[in-house]
Image (tube, rainbow, N blue to C red; front, top):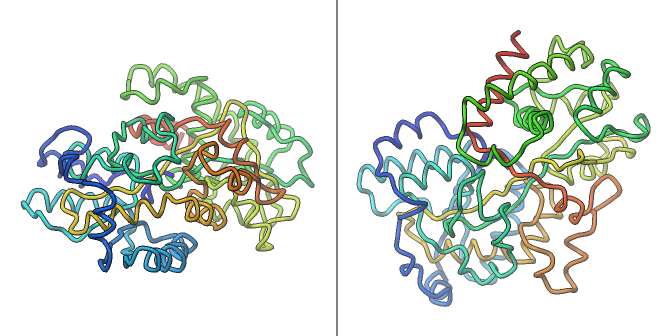
Amino acid sequence: MRSHPLSFVALASVLLLALASCGGTGGGAPAEEAGPFSQAEEAARGTTVNFFMYGGDDATNAYVDDWVAPQLEEEHGVTLRRTPVSDAAEVVNKLLNEKGAGDDEGTVDLVWINGENFYTGSQAELWFGPWAEDLPNARYIDWESPQINRDFGYPVDGYEAPWSQAQFVMIYDSARVEDPPRSIEDLASWAEKNPGRFTYPAPPDFFGNAFVEQAFYQITGQVEPYQEEFDEAAFEEQAPEFYGFMNDLEPNLWREGETYPETSAALDELYQNGQVDFTMSYNPYYAQQQVEKGVFPETSRAYLFEGGTLSNTSYVAIPFNAPNKSGARVAANFLESPEAQLELQRRNVVGGLSTLDPQRLPEELREEFTAAPGPAALSLDELRENRVPEARTEWLLAVQDGWVQRVQRK
């Protein structure tokens, strides 16, 4: 997902970056310092790994605290200490300050991160490595995939270990909608025939941002240009069609578009109360999990827009001044293990999807990874075949800001 590790980097990070030295993707330590993994395992036993991660999701916290940490202790003798933060940008700011102060031994061993936060740290040489492709469990990962080797358009180059993947899905009530619209244009036609039965959260809500980005992709009919550096002239040429479409959709939304749900939770509430027929998520298994909890109608189903839906990967990285790099590598390798990745998919964690390539797994495990967990969810194969990458942050910010100015406040 975008950072919770996944939200945009704080302005303070950008300002501090100007004070930091610029360079390649990592630069925190030469590759040879990583050493053989067997040495790391030996050195890590009996140590503690301080894992800084977004702390706002109870299911993910429980997964790390109640499942990962005990398993890591039992199997490798490593204690995992979770340190919650509200955003990975906090960690980047901390590391930038430590770098500027010449602090060669910090307090962060491992951080959950992706997107602009990783890029900012890369330019300031905050990351140890490369190391990620040398982990034993890295053999289960398709490093040739752009969904893995590029993080919001930026090369990973072995400085991050993939941990979880997320993918945007639409959710509808099949008892009320027989044939859900498979494109943003079809959705607009459906809303015109069924006024008031659809809406979406207002950006900057995370899912609101995702929906308008998905709409921008489909309306402009492009994906690849948004993986490159931001082109303001190109954006200004394409954006008017996007604004026009979203403004035309507005009168047919819930409450005639005079107000939008402020959060995805507010949209979920409208959906479960039957006031609208659709909701949305960046966790493809969310609908199934909500059905099992008795929150969503049993007739809820997830589906994808034709042409693919937004997908991203979140990672773990090791800071340049991590005091326990060996322990961090062992923890990261465990997070990539088939057993940990399968458990990640079973729980309602942020992202929810394994980063492992099913074709690289032992045959007896493939079906467990790829099968849909229930009728409200989609199979991993269908999801993997219908992914498009997130745009670079500058494009995302332009879409978000443009929507606020030209749609919400028009």
